[in-house]
Image (tube, rainbow, N blue to C red; front, side):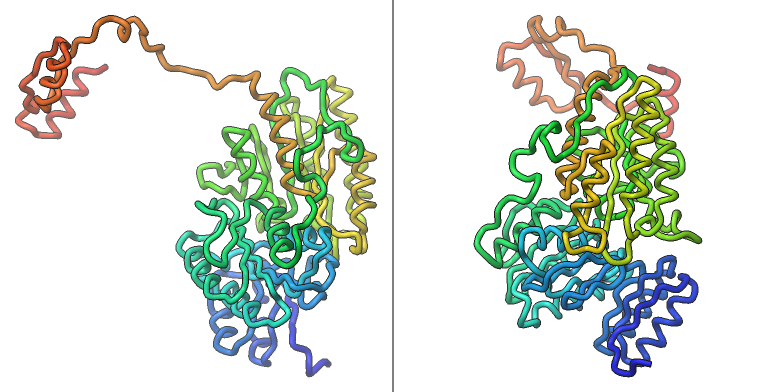
Length: 475
């Protein structure tokens, strides 16, 4: 036993998790609650209990945390430093902290709140605690806030809380564009990469551009992997197979600038929810870490089997041009994911080539040079299999977006409307005015022939009778 232990990590099945977490809180322990499929009512009760005791409940469904250089759950090996992060976004926390490390910076704390914390129902209990904790921490000089799309009301409340912090605060709420880049001590980032860069600039002299930043290099540039060409006429669609929910959200958000619609099982907009997560349609992004895929099986960061099967399924579709993957390394993740994904990528590309198609596979690798799997090793294995790879999610998504926009420009959006007769607009104007008499008077004053109709509603203004009369008239 460790009577002085401050933390209890809980990853039992969701139906038992609240009981274990509650017992830990009774003992005065902070809780890292990795378990998913925990009812939201239980989450609310646990967080209320923790807040009353001055304790943290990170989660449920909290994948990542960093406590003074020590990673909990899925976490990357990053150096200790003055930047503290609060995140309702597991892979968002990993991507931002990994990018800070790549820029030469370090992280004091990475407080994970759980994906539902910023909903109105839960009310950002842990997120608020995280901001307060980092605001008081003497070794944290800059705070970074990261979230999957938050409830608007809760987002505004958290911005008000952050404005009271005596430190600069970088904000990246995905899918919630800011009207200004700075407000008092708040600095609004355009993405995960930008959040890392801003945090570094606020703690030190301006950082050099991140790898893959600035003017985005052409796909054939050495070190990226080989860019695509030779697509068949049928190929035009994207299939994204993600293990990280935040990376999938950021991909959807960025692709809005390139594609008219992207279907998803965890969509930014409810109207874009895919009817069946097992069957892709048109442009599709699937988060394989969603609860629907993790009941009874390991998370896709730990087990590649489901993603490899789906990769081969998508590669067999003659309309698919680009497959997008994330590979998240670090503690808790598969010990060598590229060793399994790279052969699958090579096989998928070979299958497409045998059918007379070129398949572009693009991948972001989230991690650091100090991770057990080693960032460079993972990238090299994936590139050797023919994938286009970068450590920046934004760079990968924008590259794929440019490819797809070019492919889809061959398929203009069909116009089913009857063209407006231009001749009717070119001849001298004359008009019949129904309603405000002054409109007719204005036309006449401009020398335009116009008549005024003294209109009264039919059927004495009875709306039901009017609708019947309209239906009788047809079009």
